Length: 209
Image (cartoon, rainbow, N blue to C red; front, side):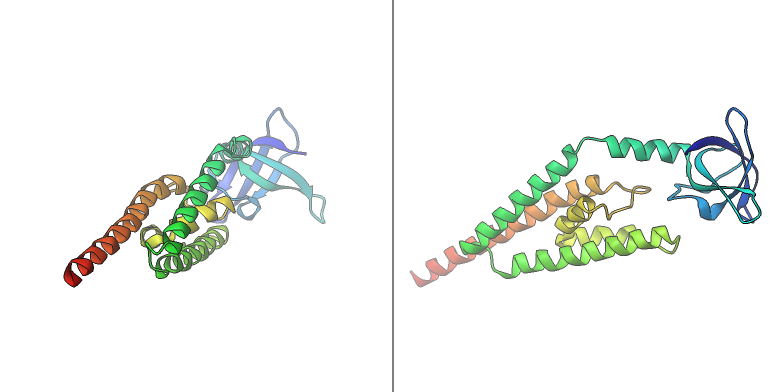
């Protein structure tokens, strides 16, 4: 059963305090390790959503704790329509189809889809490392590295990571806004490669003539 309560007597240096349930009831011990994917460290007066368990001595302890703001945000994300996921699937399908078409028709060299695939896999790997570091509160992958990977052609991997619920850089820059900018850059690069190859073919023909 979930409860709502207010944090009291919080000692941030030691990482623990107590929670008083709204409407009255038994006060429970609260530890920083009992929080789930918190957006920040708790402070006195914070409203939290939690469950209660008893330790070996019968004392009440709060567990599965979330800040009320994080709890509401999680519910909104869970109830959010899947339109963004559908758009991502459509974008990836169109891009993959166009890339395969240009490659098989000889307008793009085979190295292009290979590079896109390799960099995308590397991007997924880095987003996975970033999520793992976030859960363990360790040093995360820098935004600069993720931007560079996306600009080098890893944006399809970034979208796939979002589909698989891997990316987690919500605190600094939403994945979807980053990918929108990178998609334009990547698609423009592919078109530039195609036109460059066509120009070189025309030049060769003129030389032979």
